[in-house]
Image 1 (cartoon, rainbow, N blue to C red):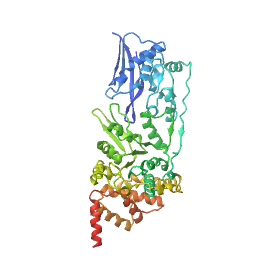
Image 2 (image 1 turned 90 degrees about the vertical axis):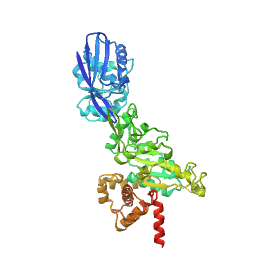
Image 3 (image 1 turned 135 degrees about the horizontal axis):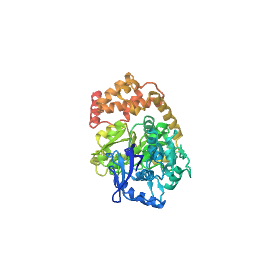
Image 4 (image 1 turned 120 degrees about the vertical axis):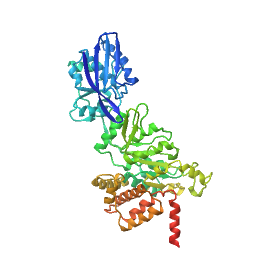
Length: 511
């Protein structure tokens, strides 16, 4: 007799439907799992045998075949245990075959018949809802799956015996309750930062338009301190963004008891992170740090210490908001629309140009150190700000009158103006820039002159206009004026050779 149910296989952050079929045939006793299964799936036969023995079941003598279709789609993970067990129990008439066919299941089995948590319950529940199926998951994953909402039927048993009793009508399982929704604001406040007014202004502009930011300064100047306070300036996730972020966190196994948070992600990987850790992939494809920062902030401290290839792997998602990992048998896409914030020292020793001190290894130390970050990546960073050392006089000052609350209010007003236009300023396309970020006559003359003297690329030219539009939004201005363009240009890094052209231009004007 044959029976079937459904489960899912993950491709990036997407849950793809998989048909699970089980059949008992004559012949020599054997337990075969077919359908391009990895080692964890193949080992499920031993966990299923032990779990059945724990609840008093035994497989019929003969050959057992479990098929996972489509056969050419890779199957990875231990969450196939429960659907395989459900198929076998349906084929043995332990549970009704039609009930098994109407559900999508996932979960790992313990040797005692318990059902253990596995990552990805939320996207799996969403897939069950799309296909008009009920959903069966471990009890620990029930609060997470309940966020799928609607009239989705969810069963969250703690063990196989509970599931059998439910289908037999002996012990009815109730629908799980969604986990907590946390809406806490970060405790860190900009009032803790003394001095660094220009850097705090750049931080506010970056938060208002979701612009990429690079802070350069000597050790102890407060770069990491200010970056850690950026989440407090950002508005909470919208309902759609919350779902996107939570599904990625679910696949990565980062949701605990279904607890969701409306705070935007803030990821700060160590500079030893590998390519797979940063952009995703690996033997068992998982979302990387860039995807876990989706709709949030990716903070890279000590930027030049990261491997150059790892940094350059971020160039594509900074433009497209997506990472595509190509493999011989599949192309996996991860969402990755993040805001890049980075910090670096001016040179390896860290003191080049600080308080008049000279770098111990001369100018070449700074040049070699900064050259570890490629020009194309630097061109994608909208705001470049120098963070000078904090003096004892700065530390002796009282706390500034304005902190995170006041700056966050201005950021929220600027983002409201952008929402009325349909997208954040950092995501404006070229045609929209011409429509909503066209500067006045004085601003246009200024950016045309600066584009030549600073050696701006076409990308850099448009990024300056996006930043100028954000500064205008913070000022509550309908149009982009010359003063907005000037401030945006002051926060833009000149291209290599641009400084020389700028100096040449000033000399010509002096003559």
